[in-house]
Image (cartoon, rainbow over all chains, first blue to last red; front, side, top):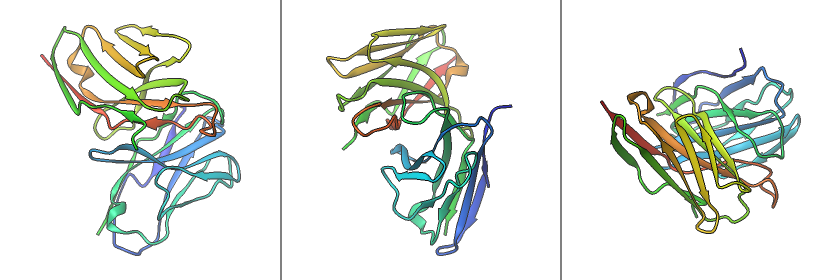
Length: 114
Length: 115
């Protein structure tokens, strides 16, 4: 089944404790992206990747890092989480980069930072 | 500065009637528009899209209309069903101008369809 898989789905952590949210897609997609969803703010892009080893900042990159060492994986790293990073996170992918087209989303990872 | 705006946070309609969700955009470089539906505890799922070379696209009960001069698009759902109750996100992208096809989303409109 074609899908985007995120882990963990739910996580409660404390300020400053490094964490990684993994994202994996099995569709051989070139393009991958991370979004966060917050009440009243909709979906905002954090980082995106056009291909392996090619990443760039979205609209709200502060406090996050990403890497794209393999085509299928695009982990989101929070080096020192803070309470304002409490949010619902979505990973998404698309077959081709640099073109218009629909994104396929994962089921989301709800993160709470105390 | 919001490039994609959904000014109605919520909408309530009766089952069987038409639901109209609206979206405005400011960036004239946008050339592709999409609607996503999101249920609680699930990721957004693609619903329908339209290219800027068209003014209408239809898929079953869902129709998207694009008015480029007004920088406005709308999603019509006819007839509305209780299972359509969800948050609907409007999104836009531009292939050129440095945007590289990144999707910009609105804040969403929560649709409630009453039986």
